[in-house]
Amino acid sequence: MLKIYGWRRSRAARCMWVMEELGLAYEQMPLNPHAGETRTPEYLALNPSGKIPTLVHDEFVLSESVAINWYLASRFPGTLLPRDPQLAAKVLQWTSWAVTELEPPLVAIMREGRRAKEQVDAERITAWHGEVHRMLDAVLEPALAGEYLLDGQGFTLADLNVAAVAMVLPVFEISLDPHPRVAQWMKRCFAREAWARVQQRT
Image (cartoon, rainbow, N blue to C red; front, side, top):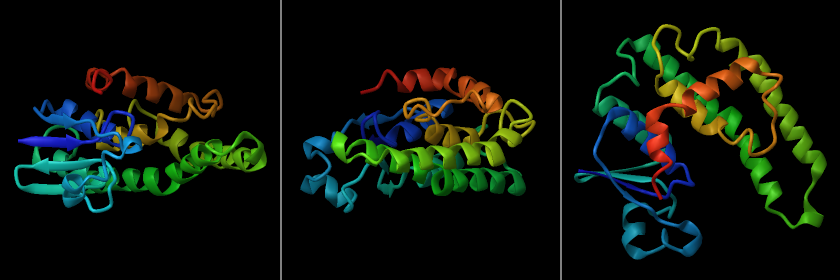
């Protein structure tokens, strides 16, 4: 039995995307952290940090979205995780890049935007936008010579994990016009039926 704690408007969506791609049956517990639903004694017993997502697979409990995704893709073999060790390492490389390089400036933009309007530092936001554009230019755009990140492998966990971070680029008004390969790649990723099924969740 697979159970995922977290609502769709969180990193739990990344994990539900993996489960949908793999065709797994799972139960979603759509906790709202803004309503204190991740601070109950029952949930804190599963995840003492009070964060989402958390995966429960029978008696096994796991937190952190990229760890959950890696576990699911390796525990339930499919096309998401290549068997070749070097290709699997490339999946891990792209995942690490997404969460350590691309995601931090995006989180910074989000947090700055939540401040009172008169306190928002527009210059800092502009600087973070520039940092994201530089990374897309230097790293992601040239890597997309084919349809997906691992040439010849089709859609893999590398694409899913990076796309799950990059999905907020349009939300933060970071134009993809200077990055046409990235734009087309994102369209392919988010046109997948598995992602559409995630969007039907709470």
